Image 1 (cartoon, rainbow, N blue to C red):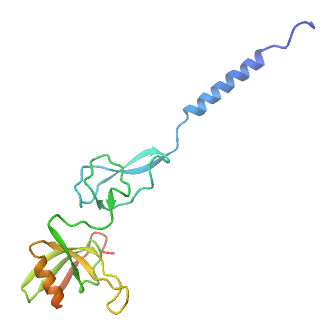
Image 2 (image 1 turned 90 degrees about the vertical axis):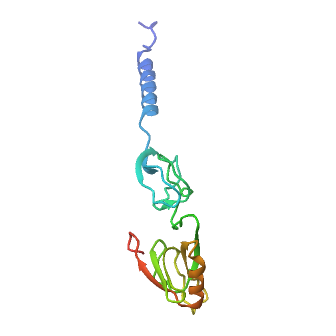
Image 3 (image 1 turned 60 degrees about the horizontal axis):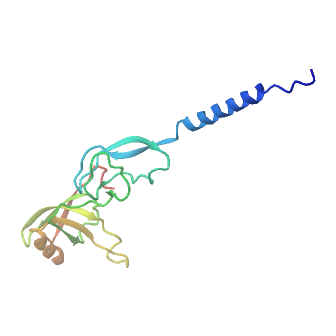
Length: 175
């Protein structure tokens, strides 16, 4: 039967298989990564509770890691570098005072500042650790945040050199 042409069945089967393969490719699951989100509403300066959720890869920037809230954070907010800070944020109305005697304190440590002249006992928060030593060119005193009412007394005692510092290390051991 010379006058009959080739059967269209193989071409139709190939076309159907091609459409099914394209549909399966399009509907396949996307690659996901776990990303940190805020688990609860958090005030500025407070540690952020983290909840990990899967998100499509490449949608969000690299996660910021852990830290305290640099701004007020609502539950469900992705924890990016703009939301978190590693530097402890003191409460409002506190002032940072440079203290030379805090060489052994790390940022985030709670310190007790004591002085006999003027009589003083104040709890503070180290916001920046000391860099270098007093004899080096890259020396910078530690910054300790204290309540605003006590800041003048702490600054005066630090300037006189009569300030003693006792350190209570942070959760991570202070380092």
